[in-house]
Image 1 (cartoon, rainbow, N blue to C red):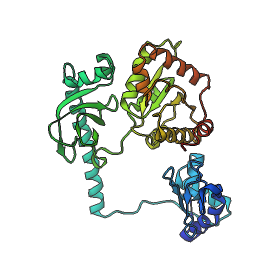
Image 2: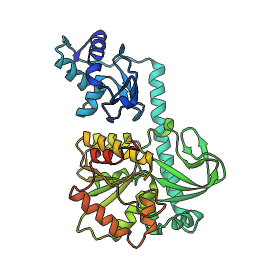
Image 3: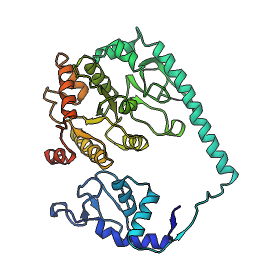
Image 4: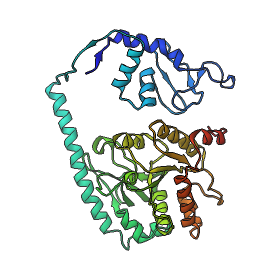
Length: 368
C-alpha cells in the first residue's frame, strides 16, 4: 500500500532537491553546465529549475530526483517517490490504488496490439525455421564462412538465409525491400524475434529489423547467455557473439563456461531491463567496439551494471592487431590465438582483474 502525495507536493520537492542533485561542472564546460547523476559527465546544460528536471546531452538521460533515486537504488518509480517524500517528512494519506476505468476504444486498441505481437511471434518462429532450412549451401553460408564462422556455429545460433527478404505488412515484420538477400539472425532459441544482415547494399542500410509496433522492444542478441554461462562477454553486434562462442569452444577454461551476447549498439537499456527481471550469477565482460562511441558506451554500460550490483568489468587492452575495430575482428584476424585470448579474458573476469567503470573512464578521458 503506497501513500498518496498531491501533485503540488511532488513538484515542490522536485524543485527544492534539484540544486542538491546537480553539481556545477568544471569551468572548461562553460556556463550552465552541471554534472550528470547518471554518467558523471558535465553535460547537463541549462536544467529546468522551475520544473525540477534535467537532461544530460551525453548519456541522453534525465528526469527528476525521483528518477535518479530509482536508478541508483534499483527501485520502481513509485517506491522511489515514497523513499524521497518520507525522507523529506511530507504529509500523506494511505490509499489503495484502483485501476482507472478505460473506455471501450482504449481496451479494444490494447487487445488488438497484444494480438498483433502474438501473431508476429508465431509468424517469426515459422519464418526463422524456414530460413535456417535454406541456409546450407546458400550465399548466406558463403558470407558467414567468409567472416570466419563454421557451419556448426551458424546452426548452433539458428542462422538462416532468405534470397528475397520481404515485408508482408503489419503484424508480420520483415525486411526493407523486395528481392534483397539477407542473413536471418534469430535472437534466441525461441525464435520470437530476429534481425537480418543484408547481403546486398541498400544505400547506407545494412540491417533489417521488425517494427516495434508489432514485435515489441528489441531484446539483446542471445540474451539467454546471461543465465547459462559463468562468464558472459558483451559486445555490440551478432558477429562478435558468434566469434566469442566459436573461440570459447576451443579454449581450455578449466570447467568455466563462456557465453556472449550483443547489445545491438552501445545502449544498455535492454540488458539492464533483462537483469532487473532476473539477476545473473555470471561475471560480465564489457567488450564494445574500439572507437569513441564504443568507449563511451562501455563506461555507460559498466556504470549501469555496477549500479544494480552485477559483477562486471571492462576489457580494454586487446585491440592491438592493426585495423581491428571490435572483438569479432580481433578473434578472426588472429584465429590461431583466438581461443587463448578468450581463455585469458575469461580468467581475468573470474579473478576480478578487468577495469572498473571508473578506471575505464579515466583511461579514456579524452574520448568521454
